[in-house]
Amino acid sequence: MSEFDQQPDRIYQHRQGEVGDFAFDSAVARVFPDMIQRSVPGYAETVAMSGIIAGRYAQANTRLYDLGCSLGAVTLAMRHGVKAEGCRIIGLDNSDSMIERARHYVALDDGRVEVELHCADITQVELSNASVTALNFVLQFIAPSERLALLQKIAAATCDGGALILSEKLCFDDIEQRIQTELHHDFKRANGYSDLEIAQKRSAIENVLIPETEAVHIERLRQAGFRHVVRWYQCFNFASFLAIK
Ligand SMILES: C[S@@+](CC[C@H](N)C(=O)[O-])C[C@H]1O[C@@H](n2cnc3c(N)ncnc32)[C@H](O)[C@@H]1O
Image 1: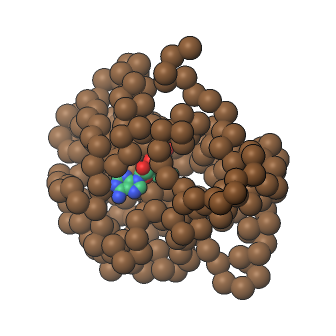
Image 2: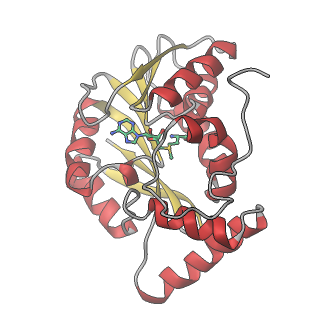
């Protein structure tokens, strides 16, 4: 068995005395593909379509950024979707465990587009010459007070006609919040998570993942400097937006 083998997610299977805050540590990195596919409705579609979107919006001799790349799923989808010449993909994540594994998976991939992976805090790095940037279920983990500055930095680094893919867990007003949450929990149960696992994960993540409404996202993307914002996908309480500069 290799240290890079992926394991099934059993992190919250047994009752924990006190459930600590969720972190993207080595235990999570080991089970991450299983965890995200069984937890995020539509995750596979957002990854696959980031390749299609990169194919349309990547411009020659520019960079594509995968911010909060985890194991590099979007990096690889973009790598195989890009048609423009001279592009380079840069994947950034501030979890060492994620980047170490991402390097392993990218090395196994035979795509021709150059890829760089770095362990870095996306709120601190400089970005430039971007035509496509992905924030695939990442902004929700950034402190709300820092979100506008990050989006402004991305918009400023993006060339005219370039794009940001922003996928997020959403929250809703009134009754829709209950309806969408019930459906999300049904999705998790259908994927084999017990009520205990769902409850413990929820408590671990509630101070760490802060969802916002679609209206807040769209208004902030415009304020950051994107001219057009399109919600191209939604599955229950998870959605993905395409913001064009
Ligand atoms: C839900 S995962 C993203 C999934 C990934 N984009 C994909 O499509 O497979 C969130 C990731 O964001 C990373 N992250 C959170 N805050 C970050 C920050 N400030 N800088 C860099 N990465 C961050 C976490 O380490 C984690 O790997």
